[in-house]
Amino acid sequence: MNGRLTQWSAALAFAVVAHGAHAALFDDEEARQRIAETNQRLAQVQKQLEDRIAAIEVKTAGIVEVGREIELLKADMAKLRGQIEVLVHELSEAQKRQRDLYVDLDSRLRRIESAQAAVPAAAAVPGAAGAEVPAAAGTLAPGASPLAGAALPGGAAGAAPAATGAPAGVARPADAGAEQRAYDAALELFKRGDYAGAIAGFTSFVRTYPKSALAPSAQYWIGNAHYARRDYRAAINAQRTLVANYPDSGKVPDALLNIASAQSELGDTAGARRTLEEIVAKHPQSEAAAKAKQRLAGR
Image (cartoon, helix red, strand yellow):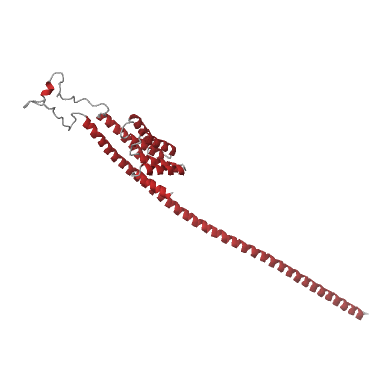
């Protein structure tokens, strides 16, 4: 009896051990399967991460390249801006030199015109300084004094003319001086860049001295000052006033050239061409005609 119990106990123990071994073997297989599945999922996640990182790197490389190009463009823009500033300064200086040269040339021509106008005026005044007054034939006896005729009663023939009288229409020296000062004052305002003051000064001059030899130049500078202020319509009107009021003036070709420039600034290309052609046709020997030909050739 005891032997049998021992055998049963041994068999039961073996069965329990075998069942435990089988259960352990089953748990290890399931664990290995789960580990494999987990590794597979990890591999998939890792691949997805690698793909994303690669895409980000590509985008980052593109952004870096774009940023580099932007910096290069900024450097080029800064360089171009500096060059533009230099060119603007040089253009401004060139325009100033050209304006000063033109003002100087105008002043010289004005002095020549004033000198030419003064010669006929001096010749028209009897007994003026430097003019010889010939004695009338038969007036003086041999050995008589040249002043003898001055004592004749009633102002007989041979009497010296009064020194204080001036022919009508001839400007007195004081008036000529005031005229010159008024013109020079307005011209100085233009040279300083005070175009509004120059317009007012030259307008006052033209109104005060409409018959002056300087009036055409004054009217021209009115138009030029308007042009400098970029008031192109006013510039055109001022220069047309010069052409209408002083058609024989040497300033007419320059006035027409200024009109053509103003028309170009206003976008009136056809009008500018007609004005340039008018300069060439009516004033072919002028300097303005040479400039007009150059502009027509470039259009």
